[in-house]
Length: 418
Image (cartoon, rainbow, N blue to C red; front, side, top):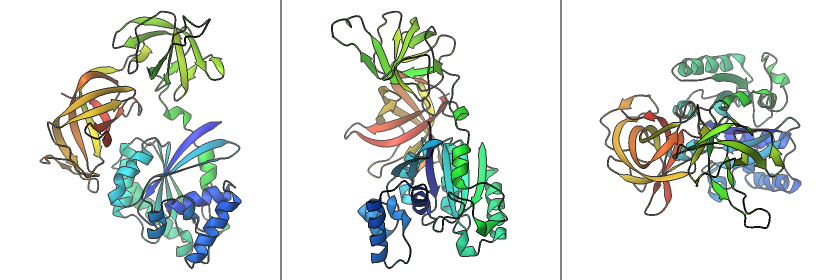
């Protein structure tokens, strides 16, 4: 069954958590004790309705303040697909959490309060979603029940968002009028909006084509672990375990190992279910090669005729994710790229990006919490990478503060620095 990753984004109080709760509730994915718990909490708050946002706002501080702070992940399935939903925060001070939740999404659900229309945070999250190369954007105009299901309001928001999106790199854009609280157009089509001719949100999510979004052309296999069992009959076994980051691997394929450049042939593709005829992104598997080559964690297996970029000077967009320090030129970090770890130094901060206006501040001297900018690095070891727009896995990395091992930044590779 195909897995689809979702992320709800948008401004605070636009109904992201309620929408996720509605999807879980209407698709029969919650237990009776969970329902009883949120019914009890809703009554204690004086609500005359069941507050479905409580299904995802799990932190005590979230429930007390009525906002989402951390990223909440929930899972549900229909007969057609499995879904992983990331409920991301709407507050500007939690932009780093939103970046984390949307970074692996196939579909971003951008919620807009029908009463307020596009606001600053809506534009910010929409831009970040396109920067993260989320392939499908669905604009959910929420709380239509509070504007009497007015078609004119929906059309106005739709036109305004299209004008804004014209400045962005959007591959697929859809608009659905919904009421997460009442359930209109979430799982079933709503009779309150007969003027809407599209599908319900869940029907769209079950039908959206995500397989072609993954890079199945450039074969990339970062080695995570070398398997050498010392059991009788397996003394000669040597397997390379990891997750396929791109392309397809089949027995008989000629491959090359980086950084050594040695070549070999794939002898077998193995999983927990036994030998497979092929492995493709994002499958986890073990590759066995016909030749014994010195391969270790952090090496990359690719095709002989299609290899990634290899370099130590990297040009990237970075989101800074800590308030304890800032990113400045000459600062040194640990860098984690696929399964490869190295050290890196900032050689230049080219500009800081104003996410609200999309303007570039080329005089910026640093990046602080939740800020994004274009940065060049030099690493102590070569990285085997593709541009982020071509492969989100081999084109991304994290920066680590070596003094405390905390993740302080996340980056998207634009190419080699010039």
